Image (cartoon, rainbow, N blue to C red):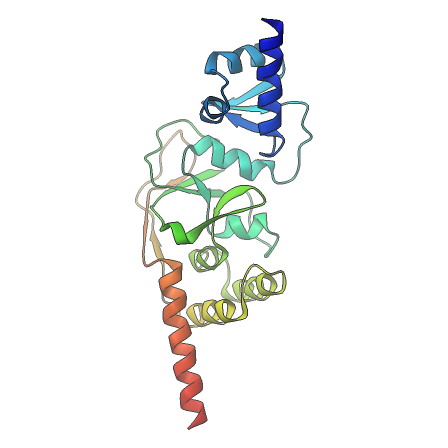
Length: 229
């Protein structure tokens, strides 16, 4: 029994070391650790319970990205960082990190920390990726979704920095700048705030960033073609 318990502990630790210290009951099931064993590890002090079905290995050192990883885990399956929170994660722009914006295609009814703002939306797979081991919207999408939250000058600066640091190709960066200049693309509407569950923006919509970038690239190409005449 002791060896089995030790094996569960090792599996949880090996998973958590690559996940900013976090493990969920879903993660545990995937690595062969029953939920009841997570609760036992928590009762013995190996794990700290941070929310519904979410635990953290206490011995793993914390970093300045933990709050972002924790927010995504707390919102639940298929959640991801979005808009200016992605810029904050990658240190691309000086933004207000008091609000951690998390998108999800699912309804969220659980209690969340006040700083976690949930947006109910379903992004195309092409608009999603991982940065720093945390599921996020792609930087093109994040920049466009940040309009109305971050000043356009700062978004242009963030686009430049994203290009320099390899997050955007030159053509994608040009397309984002064109979208920022034109003010077209994804628009967000606040429908309601979920009381007692932190801030919640429930509905968002618009074309995917990939479609927006393609449209802007065509516009840039057309302008260049016209200038040559």
